[in-house]
Length: 419
Image (cartoon, rainbow, N blue to C red):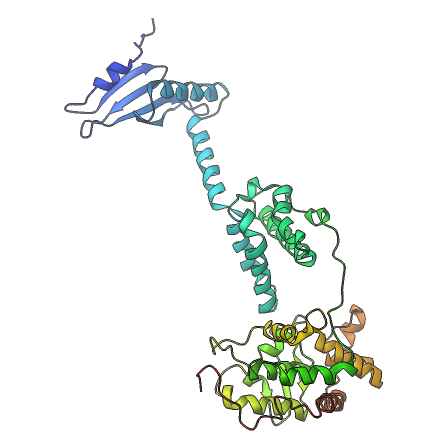
């Protein structure tokens, strides 16, 4: 006849002590209470036979009084129910603990960091990588950064982007949605989730309407040069705008120009491949007017790494948006942006009758015809020298009667206190 275990009572448990050695009280069905003799702490345990090997095993259920007698019996019953289904309670508990840990560890933010490390190996320009992370910080992480990827739904991702969409930032939303999809796709292939719920979230938003950058006609350039010469902006900001205009370079490339990239003897500025989207070095022949801008900056930054150093931290370059903000303050908000300076040059050059291929090479554009682009690797460097000289004269004529920052300053005042 099987031995009958008398069930424990709350009174018995409260009074129980271990004097010389550990004491064990049995409640029946495998449930027991261990009382440690050194501390008199009381721990609930459940003993059972493993379903697979039939070997004896034990699982801790927690301490008394945090786990009451009723709670311990409920946990015992749950464990016996698992055993009835040939599930090991200890293995089941380990799996639950692992799942909880993964939920805490594998948040969207943490997975995004892992993805970004991989993304950084794709030979993307530093500015591109920085913009990707800034987009996440501004529009994604605040809403879903702390959520486990295993719990994320398409609706969660869409809701995260709704504020930006309502602000009219449709292009930002499109890019952010694409990058969320990339992170979740990485999470899928890395085994963190089984399917990607963000695969089609871009379809939840209308396609952004493509708009050309605000710009002005070449015949409006004299008026712009007048506004630039009279603007209440820092001299180096004015020079940066002139430098970008004369070299028809992109705002980020112009702002981050390094002295080491300038060859005064050859009159060339070489933008390294790692800075550019097309991942190909771009050499810009410098007009005399562009050289004058560099000569005007030399007293202030010739000993620095960057031609146009940041005023707050001269070890860093000026921000690419500095020119944009200055142009806006000059009264050109909605009419012209820094990137639109390239369009002024393109329009003037095309209307003058220069070869479209040479103009496109000067703008550092990649041929949209991939086959043609693969075979046509000419940079037209020699043909671009007279083109850039013509453009330099065009800009100088537009500024006639209005001192340009480069030509109108004999000695550039050092701003910000550095020498």
